Length: 524
Image 1 (cartoon, rainbow, N blue to C red):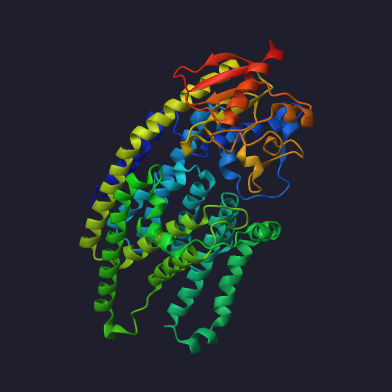
Image 2 (tube, one colour):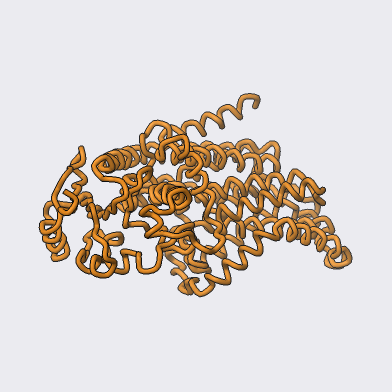
């Protein structure tokens, strides 16, 4: 298939089109990441500015830095919204390419299996805005590919090479780093057992060989391992102990939840059939193994079966571990994602090529249909981002901005962050600064969520501006009311209206009428 790879590249380009064509490619957490990259720049180069009054760097050496650093670097020469789209584009290109490289390293003839990755490209992880996690996945599959191709033991240059990659993976995402450590450790042990035909006597007789390889992995991962243990020590008490209900988790698993992003009921129509595609391919692969194993016993278990064991292990973690570990949330869906991706790697090794071709075709069709279904929603989100971003022109630098978001669309939770992405405007709604695993945190007694009310957490916000002023000695300079329905008449909204009438004046309505900007009377 001489030109097959160009078709693969063409599909990557198709998945890139929304990122290229839309002025804003809005994800849930993305605007907050862009805004915080701007804050990091202010803290580094404008130490007397408003940002340094409210925020400080997290004293812990955190793993969640890579996307912020990339945005910060790109922002030096590009507008923030373009920088964000470049970061997303890097992921959309690198993720399928790195996965394809690993698949072909496992089975050089399994071209069709590489197309099973496409439904996962523009899916939950990236549309939720998990930028560092997504970039970490690209690094992970590339490192697994290089590890498989390099062979053991590593020479000195190889050890330095992998040490650098392991550090980069740590600073992308802790979950990914722990996953890479688990995968590499398992690959080393599984290969050792397989080399000695799973004879316990031979395995233990050559234990020193296994230990040398494990010790080498520990050496090249020494620094990130130490940082991981330090982070886990500080955050161990913040691990959730509640296990989700099994029936609910099973339904999500069958729906292939990691593919679903914007509209669950609509998108599961295209994701759920893939579960049955994988099931058919799995059964076919098992039958193929049975038929191709001489004697059906001695050579039945082979080196590539390790991917299947890892898939089962990820599934176990998915069903039986809490969804919040070491202060990090959305853990279950990540385990679910890895369960399917490791399964695809196993399928690449054993599923008959003709049947895999059918699975690849259905995967590509599913992915393209999902792209088409999401197009209208992504366009509407881009329009909203443009609408709100215009408000920046009417806000003075070094002033504070409070957003009151009345929309019930969860994808708009952080969209107002675009207003402050390249101007020294202090946005008082910054969820990242309330999380221990992000670069910036609120300074003591400066977090408005603990004083002002629930403005950043509810679509019927209740706020107390006088309490905020009496506690901090500060006044909020601008307030943006976003997507407020005309029929809202609850007590919280009436209180907001009264406070706005007493201390603010309306100065701007966004072009589409979705945002109304108010300015404090004392600034006129």
